[in-house]
Length: 495
Ligand code: NAD
Image (cartoon, rainbow, N blue to C red; front, side, top):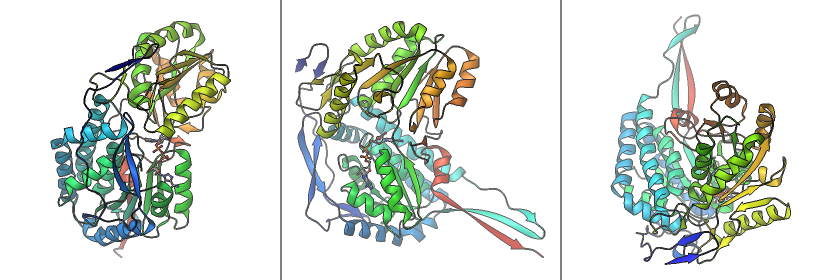
């Protein structure tokens, strides 16, 4: 069945997805157990607005029980060798891979994302576990040596202890994998709180790996951030808390964590500039923004959402971009070729539509899209906003939807200054065929990842994380193992 709008079509699958749901309960000490409260949270399919299931609205007592289980399991897990831990991580990767279709269907049903995005999420989660298994074994410290007379120094890398992990809704299993793999690989135990909107694949993972991971090493508590996330952040027995989420949630986590002076790992929002110079391959840049600005419906922290294009090629580039975006297909997850799906929730859909109302109030031009698409489901048209002056709200507010804005600049210096004029510092891209520019401009940009003639290509071996308001943790790569480890210096007197 299809529903026509003026330009965009929502393709709807003929049959509904029928995902395999996880057990009901909190996963604590190696088993699903009842929550201390009977309150629940509805889990909705945002592409159909149907309630898929319910999960417990966890409590402080649930977190305390999970932390106690993680504390009890801590010493034995820390004493395992990297080889033992790698074997567990490889097993988890194999289990996800063997159940790939189940995870893809469940993820798509819970998030409204197209099949291609769900497939990529699951493949990347598998790769994250495999990489961390290898990296944990290859990880070493400086060799022992003398730095004071008659004294030999040895550096040990130790686990931090119990890690609290708080994940967002945009890539539920993948963001869990980005934390679970290095946290366990480095020898820590953990308690993870998935987003209250999208806990299903994380719970399914717990169900399928039960028995493969020692009891208490990995615990999952569902529920609201202000209760479960806050308790994890303040808990005196949690040694480090890591959150992937918005800046305001990161600020709350860091504030709650300060009471016990625990370490904090923050992967927060972004507003990635895409700087298109006059010498760029404009077609490639427009195609790049189509894929990297609208991947996962633009609900992506590194989304290519803010174009800065040189004034001499702005008209040509905008024409190419509008053509690309007009071709995007919108649909429900089961509808084969859909390029973008729904927004994650009614509340988020309303937030994105309110941002589009502000765009109109600010007198900016909506060159394509800009409206809701008739439901059921929280669909919004892929949108390009032009005629955007420097400093407009859309240049700095993270919309987190299928909306890209286009500004112009005159000089290289202006491009760099304007690109850096944001509280965020997660990711950026530069599009140019000039080799000098390709070397100098990325060095001047204040972002944790800068692509040249590309955007949103992620390599598991390379670090991912932000500067400034985007936080200061590093996911992926061996830098994540560093972040979830502590170093200890032991000095031996040989005198
Ligand atoms: P969110 O901040 O609303 O929620 C993230 C998590 O934090 C959820 O599990 C939520 O329950 C929890 N939380 C909320 N309030 C809390 C509190 N007071 N204490 C502890 N935990 C709390 O974010 P979201 O809407 O789920 O995800 C979208 C945001 O995540 C965007 O800003 C996006 O840019 C960001 N994000 C960043 C990265 C990255 O790698 N930097 C990756 C994905 C998403």
